[in-house]
Length: 274
Image (cartoon, rainbow, N blue to C red; front, side, top):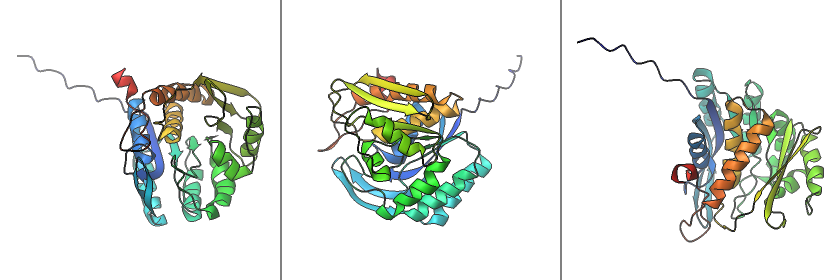
């Protein structure tokens, strides 16, 4: 009987690292990031910055990790495994923002910054004292920054009321050093469309998708940022990575489901169940 040749080693998928907090309810944070990365065919890795006690009704408690724990996790992953894109989420405090920004500055990979300020339920996830560190330390290392309208107002003072205001918001984010700004207009009263603006100050991409009548949207921002990072790790240009991420998130929102007695999550596995 002829012996079979050894199987070829499996190809390593693109590597993406999320630096964010944990959501015990599984809808947002590290959990949403890793689910998104798996769904989009990349290998997700994580640096935990904070632990939250969280469910469909909101955040009941949050505990940030020490800076040395965050630094050790990051170095353990990057120095041994490597990374092709990084996504940041909940960073909680000025000390953690500055620690993570320093680590990112020394990592030759694209960075997607989701400047998480509050949860879907309105709970604060970033100390007010950390806003200046986000502006001056974190945004300058961002390949793409993905603020929603509340986060734009927090960081820049720009209040977006009309679609045309999104240009002003993007200019304000870019002024802090981000290479691209993705202004998420999901909270705008724009009728049947959810409109986002992606720009680097030179070219503009208006991204429009159907607005789904679904209140179960917990984790939308984490999911979008992780999807963008996944696309960048695959070698896509920023506009294409954002376009594909928008398509994925739109489907996840449409498939969002009830969980507990409050706001349920988007469905990260919607393509598997379609």
